[in-house]
Length: 264
Image (cartoon, rainbow, N blue to C red):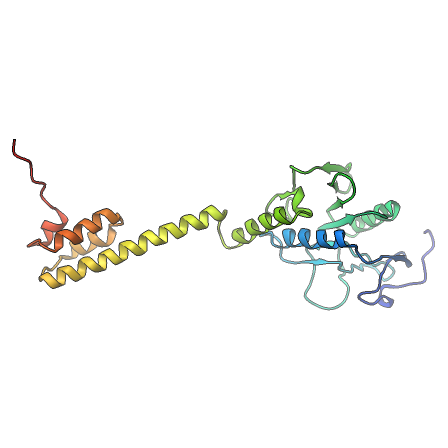
């Protein structure tokens, strides 16, 4: 395609099955079942990464009037507004299934690199599934299941290769990403916080019970006693204090109980 073709991006409407390369129309048919399912899973895995502020599926990118490319997944540089994007995403993903035009795929990769894409992953759904990693000026690399994909400066977390097409792997990676966005390292950290909150709720209830028993017995803790009780988090000790307060004649007898020695 040395000479420019007759078409410009403004002639293509959203939803039209065409891309443009130097003004030449390139037919881009609808995605099949397998590809559509994988697109959705890979998209949610990447879009939820803590470092990602925007992402889209089949976003049209037109940096020049006679060019229009739409990677299956665009990570970054996707605005919440109508029209084509004017700049390429830093990370793009293409899904390759049966009938893939390999020459056209390579041309698309080069054009996206020309306009600013830094990393492009091709997810191969035929045969033994894997991901091809493309970067400008570097040899293509292959990532197989059981390994992880990295996008430094674009994604915060590594992406398990399987998360680009497998439902369970995608859900696990998405959950991790969403927890990270809320400040948790993983699900175990959420559970640990829940247990800690439960312990503190129990300690608070025991402190309130101790204060009620002191009041009912006419015992008045000093400021230092209040501070000591407020600082205590051990549920067993707080429970012991509540039990002692029911019969003690002083606050000190509760907080500093004397241990009776058994007679020999």
